[in-house]
Amino acid sequence: MSEENRTIAWNSYRDEFPVTKEYIYFNNAAVSPLSTRVREKVDFVLDQHLKEGILCMDRLFAQIAVIRSSAAELIGASAEEIAFIKNTTQGILLAAGSIKWEKGDNIVMPSIEFPANVYPWIALKEKGVETRMVTPREKRVTAEMLIERCDERTRFVTVSFVQFSNGYRIDLEKLGGFCREKNIFLHVDAIQGLGALQCDVKKLKVDFLSAGGHKWLLAMAGTGIFYCRRELCNKLEVPNPGWTNVVNHTDFLDYNLQFRSDAARFEEGSLNIAGIFALGASLARFLEIGLQNVQDRILFLTGKLANGLQERGYTIASPLQEAERSGIICFTHSEKSSEEICAGLSANKAVVGLREGAIRASLHFYNNISDIDKFFAILDG
Image (tube, rainbow, N blue to C red; front, top):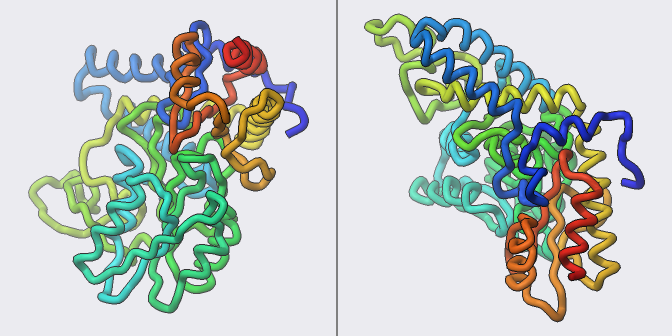
């Protein structure tokens, strides 16, 4: 991006993140810092339980319905298509366990996925399901490369919206269009993109999406969202039967295993109420700002970072083409080890990650140009 949207009160939003007062925090792709508005919502829930116990539950669950709608709005879905989950892995397990597999079926995925989006699928080998790993070219597994590996027995394509190791953003629209045309389910591990980039599941023709809340969504570990396309809900298996995902879940002694017809059929037990309120506070902020504005700011900041790194002789290991960029910039230096660079940054309170031999910097909307200037001052020192 050539310029950021200056009509947004970015400094005011930055003030909600106390971490910025002491650290240059460029590690949102690992774990995001909490904001004061998130902390306030968690404190509210705990305070209600402290003072009233069960008496507060009806009020809290009414608010959870609002948060479910906010999650749906963020991704262009309906509230009936959203289930709350404890982490990305749980969502992937739900997707992998929701259909009746037949021996000889196959799944297509990149060979460089984070393990959460690998193990639930390769575990289907015991059912005779083949997992087809697509090897990257030039550190990318593109939509076209995945499409090439599909055939008449492909049941699922599963892919990260953004690759954790280098920040590559895949063309979900092309992949989703192909999968829908061929009646192949598309599952998206969205944890490295959702909250940083626009993601309209209807436009992209996504069938399932899983995303934990503790990275770009700026919430807490232990919560997240799972999207299941409404037309599929009643046709799917429920791999986790429990007391809350049946129709008559408040009639405790009428054991009628009739599952709910919406995505809440995947919520098998008591919810993480404090975590969901934390997620709701963060979702409300994204909707206030607008996800397009968030995306524009993040790409503006990462563009500044990438340009400055290149001027200083660093090699960028992340894609720089506009359609492939994300909030992640990975870089190396020919004369210094990445471990040495990371140690120097850490000693000066600059927080980054290390992935596949490269330094991984991941900036969010609360970061600013001053952070980048200070970051360069450390590298130059």
